[in-house]
Amino acid sequence: MFRLVLLPSLLVLTLVSAIAVVWARHENRVLFVKLTRIQARRDALNVEFGRLELEKATWADPGRIESIARKTMGMVNPTPDDTRLVRQ
Image 1 (cartoon, helix red, strand yellow):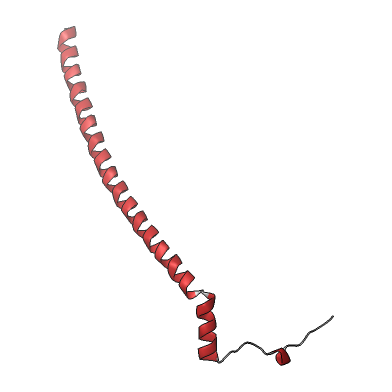
Image 2 (image 1 turned 135 degrees about the vertical axis):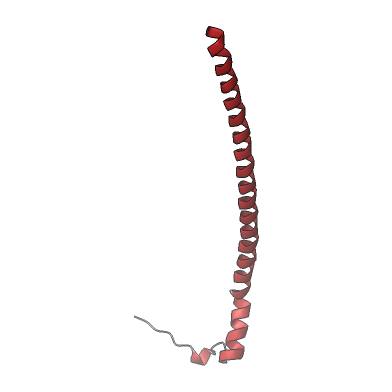
């Protein structure tokens, strides 16, 4: 009687365990693919961030700003006669 209950129970538990292992491996693969996509996106964003930092540095270059100020706005360095000393 004990063997009639034990053997089918062990068989069912073995099958449940095997299904759990297969499910866990599948879930692991799905999560790994997701992780790989996220890492690729992170890498792309890091590249874009570096490009934007370089562009920002280019736009903020003092020589470039001075050149635009001189050409577009007609700005020049003040002469000594244009300089005034203010005392408090």
